[in-house]
Length: 81
Image (cartoon, rainbow, N blue to C red; front, side):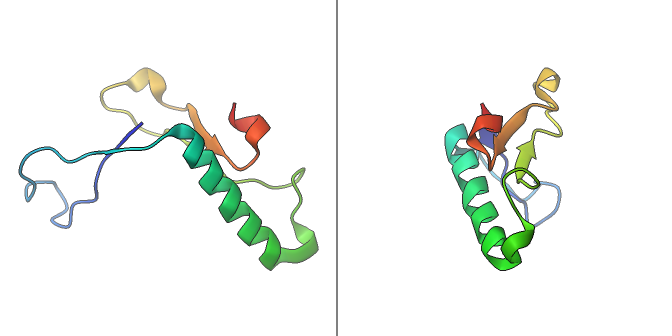
């Protein structure tokens, strides 16, 4: 998966050359799981695997519009596959 950097100038006019980052999709789910576990510790008995989760969905894809809406990662490994 490719990610775009956040431009401090707001419109990428301050960038020169190419900047990108590559992320493995399974690491996205791992991060979601870790953040969910942190929330669960803070919330106590309120959060369970059957009533909560963290997920990331591809909202916008200029170059690959058919990928919009695709699940990228989830805190529940079974849902992320």
